[in-house]
Image: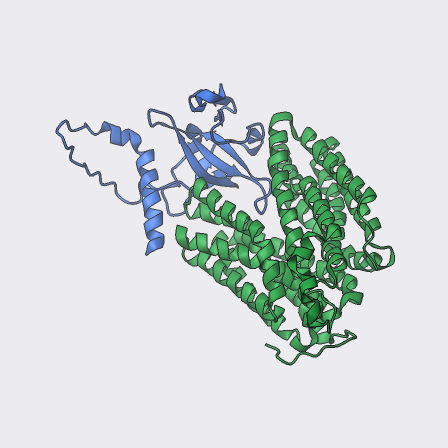
Amino acid sequence: MTVHWKRSAIGLVLGAASLIALANAVPAADTAPPQASVTVISGGTVRGVLGRMVQGTNGKDMGRVVDVIVDPAGQVRAAIVDFGGFLGVGSRKIAVDWNALHFREAVKDGGPLKLELAQDQLKAAPEYKEGQALVVIGSTGALEPLNFLQSPQEK
Amino acid sequence: MGSNRLRMSAHKPSARSTRALDWFVFFLADVQTGFGAFVAVYLTTEKWTQVEIGFILSVGGIIALLGQVPGGALVDWARSERLVAAVAVATIGVSAFAYAAWPIFPIVLLAAVLQAASSCVLGPAIAAISLGLVGRSAISVRLGRNARFASIGSGIAAAGMGACGYLLSSRAVFFVTVVLAIPTILAIAHIRADEINPEEAHGSVPREAPSDRRERSIAMLARNRPLLEFALVLALFQFANAAMLPLVGTYVTTQSSNWAPALIAACIVLPQIVVAAISPSIGRRAQIWGRRPLLLIGISALVLRGLLFAVVHDPHLLVLIQVLDGVTASVFGVLVPLIVVDVTYGSGHFNLAQGIVGTATGVGASVSMLFAGHLGDRFGNEVAFFALATVAAIDFFFVLFVIPETRT
């Protein structure tokens, strides 16, 4: 059905994004036109993360993944998580360090991502705004600015 | 529906129609609450990107703004407000079902447009049915009662759907909305058509001679100075008001992460309780004191709220300050349709006029979010709240020096 088309399409994109290292490991074919390579990953070992619930280590729901931030090398640097709020009021999008997230349960159907940050540690993080300098909150609780996103005209 | 309408000089609607209108207002608030809040969360769980979700919300917002005037004109033009309202509710139900069943871009876009367009019709339709039912002499009390039931409806819906979204899924909220559309339509059907005076519902004097028709042209509304001044009052009011709750919500989230959702829920529900409690007496006072004193009280509460938000930082006290939001909301909930009745009575374009003030309200709200969001980012929340309070103060003086008393 069309619903599945939508889901699988985005799931595929994100699955590919999170497996970027794996894709890079495949040697590029020099012959032109390059032949498409096919990688088969068994179901249950990978999963898309968009819209996935993020839980604290205490199992409390904290928010949802709404976007993934990559650098020019294609490395995933941060996840944008929509935190808190009630009925859409007061929710904030915060960039959390990709390394602060744990995905063991996330490959299960509907399984959450685990974030090794206490909710109080997130308070200090500024809200994520597209196109502005990105401040990523890491597992040490430190705020790490990512400058590569800053566009030239903003400087 | 209802071909044999009586033209009554004295309006005495039956208890059945009165109660049916109560329930209509109550369930409609339920139906409308579900939509706004859950669209973004639901589409996120359906793996929509932020860009797509933002686009859908913007399209809905633009339709909701541009549709106000045509929506009001449609209600004026229609001879059965009940039919228009029922079709609009059914459309919202179908839209909610489409969201839940087929979350793909073209369907959701269409559903968002239909939902926004239907809402543009329903605001004027409720006021038109009320006016047609009770007549001008009793309308202020009736509007107070409407505000009470709308507030109870949306308060219960916010709590119930919040729980539903949390315990089941955000998709379930849309199915609940579909189900709630059914009692809403049943309630409309229970309002007796022959008790709604169609002339009255459009704000014209009954049995007016057809030769006066040119006098009642739409252009007359554009020259209706009290109406345009009042539209400006509302634009300024929403400019000052609309961004306050979102700003407080964001602030609460940064202050108290663990309790933020509960505190924000309290910030939303507390004003609803106040509105439910005091709206009927606002309706009565509007008839005794006149409109202006109440309008000034409502705007004063807004000024005070802005100033308090700027200086108070304890999240629990912020919730208490929201009582003032309830005061402002009930004053405006009752007085907006009431003053529009006052200034357009006899024109036959009561609902179109509602669309005009609705547009002004929407413009004010959009500007508010941009303005306060920008100030908050650059200079902090205190500055944003002071600025909003200043806008509210300007509105206060505008009412004080320019707006005439419209009670007759």
